[in-house]
Length: 517
Image 1 (tube, rainbow, N blue to C red):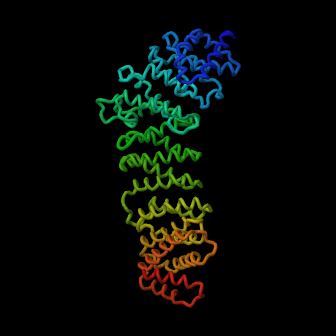
Image 2: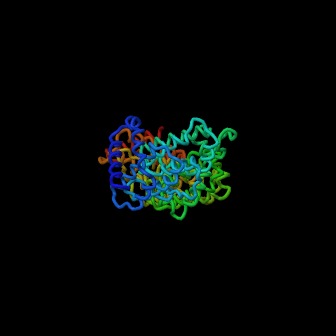
């Protein structure tokens, strides 16, 4: 390529950069005419010997103009693909996404039919930041028609998996995407739904309820798995960070009962995400597994021991000391335990409910972070509801944790203390046959808490928070009265009638009111 030609390219590109969309449309023929003097073969040769960043950027921009304004002849297509590949494997500094093997197209494997070439080319363009809008225009010119036809159907059948990867990798708030790319992806997705007779994206991915009308009765998800499966293992997916998001996005578009047929295909990779050392990957894997549990029947989840495998993977996450991981793990653990034990376990035998509760209690006991304690305490009532009478095996430890939590204020809203009192009320209800053994212990830490609440000068909580705490305390005393009967009432009467310092009279008055309610 001569220096004059390169200089002319600079002029064309500079002129285009100063135009808005309307002006570009008006000048389309003029720009296209100037570009026609550039020989594609010359550009390809020039790319092989580039060593100047400005020249590379110029050729890259020029290539965009080709895609936007040129109508390709069949003789140009092979050379055009070669140029595309050469541009896409240039240094990362020229486009802000990770370059990977997805963006490389081997011309030897492409059907040399003109329209098929353009379909492949447009899909390659989806993978590149600079060429994305140009690829979309190419798609609009050559593929996206008002009505579907056999040609479009054959293209989508061949490229369905690549299509889903390309489009869905741009739909989220990712560092390799932006609002323009998201909007283009949505447009393309809607167009494909329309021409393939799918009434929404979910039916395109998962399959249609009316297989006689839709092009893909089983959806495009099996084609996506064919493309992704070889790359989702042995840490290959780490090199291409959008792959995990593509799979998760597609999985969450498949609803009950269609998801069951894909459990064995997607679960191994989701478990791999859960076991990863990065918190983001853990949370993504766990939240997707929770979606899977919600959209398959318990019998299907237990059929090949999937539920036990999921439980083991989730239980290990309780050894992590990260609030975000605890939050998603506990929610998912509750659901998988309900799958494993669908009915109340009325027998006093050890189950995975007990193992899980013990670990949660241990974490509460040994953590020194209020944020972690809040998350763990917040989930305990749910576990108590499902464990029922088998909770008596853990009464000692539960009460010691309640006492420990009530000793320390955790801020203005006293969330931990409020949770501790709710947990106490649950324990008193479900462990009532054995509570008489712990009456003195419970009374002792409740009295300390009442005194702290009424007399402490260092409490920062509002009057509204205090009211909530007093209501929970009143409920606790009422529950104790139900469990202990006359024996407990006599103990309370002796405390109320005891001779005490004047400043403790408010404590006696509160106990009297609570006992009489």
